[in-house]
Image (tube, rainbow, N blue to C red; front, top):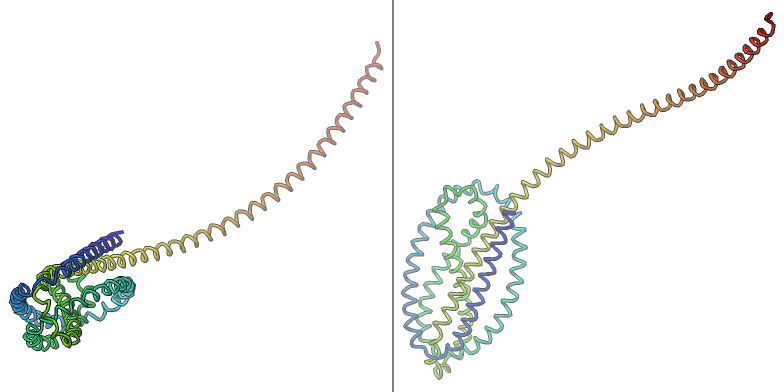
Length: 346
């Protein structure tokens, strides 16, 4: 039941994250309705965002330096990692079931995105005045894409390493306490970074199309971006919900591993029970063999008893015949005694 309770906790966390995600979506839609009020406020916030982005990238480079150091130690751990992959395949079977549910979730997400695409139709008008901003942004993104090319290569190996790392960490809890803390932050950052890059690639694909009609934008541009910060708040809220869901997913996976351990313990007990059951059945068969032997002896005794009763009845018949003869003799004896009394002189 411990594994089940853990899975249920993870499921509740997932539901909470989904509700948070939906709240963020509603907030985003509210912000989008007010989004067209002005662009100048957005540009100030964008400069602040880029400053924070540069700071974040500096921290990211520091984390990557530590990550390379961890990878050196990870190569040594990979020697024992192959054995853990066997158990991971079993876990992946359950993960595929989880993915099936996730695909169902994504079906609803696609429905929501249909409405979002309608929202983006109005957003295309906003992008008319975005050309000047995007010129500098494209220059920054060129360098960023170069960095991301190397980062994606590192992440390919990192994702392969992290797939079985959760199973490996069970035996490393004492040694890896600080390492788990770093990896949690790193995984959260990487997940958010991948999500941002996916959205960015989508935006860039749509941006090329939008730039064709970009020159017609300036009519309503200045009033657009007042609500953009509200939109970004909703986006951050949605990302918080996504991180919450990922935490719930990790919790469910931990519960799944606990459940599998309990299942193995149950199977071991079941095998022990079956061994005892076989021993019990062997003893039961031995008992039944002895019971049949006793029944055979009982039937033999009953046959002897019936023979004894037949002899007893024959004996009693002879006894009755003997007693009849005895009574006849006694009658004759009394008759003689009577006759003798008559013959006695007076």
